[in-house]
Image 1 (tube, one colour):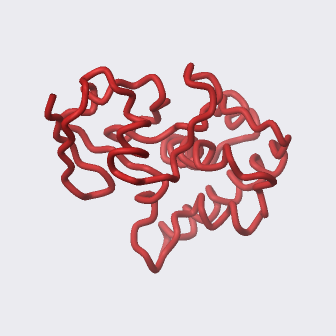
Image 2: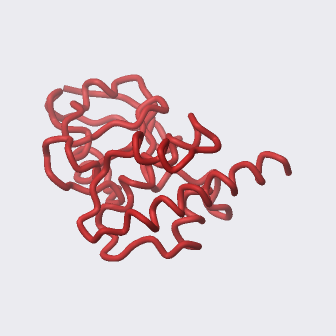
Length: 158
């Protein structure tokens, strides 16, 4: 089945089975390796990306549901090659990753959170981010999300 959508600002057309998870289309058909496979059951969040601005677990999201929509992966989160998204900058500033495998999904979930809640409390973060980090970097993740929200507010005033 031919499915058309926009990914990271570029039109894409793939000829794959309609039920193929968007994760595999992004990674295997389009070669964007930032989105990771974690559990395959939409539980861990490693595969989180955005479809029309909503965070989705792409391992269980059929590509047919992305038809005509806009998909954003970690590679497309930055507004330009010269400027990182506040989430990406905060992840660097706070030295969040340990192994780093789950981090793209966390970053995509966090980007959605600070878009919806520009000044999240720790409770907002804990109740809205359900991704799993096996390395236990959750304290640094919370600190980075607070930092990203601050960077986003600063950027909005410039």
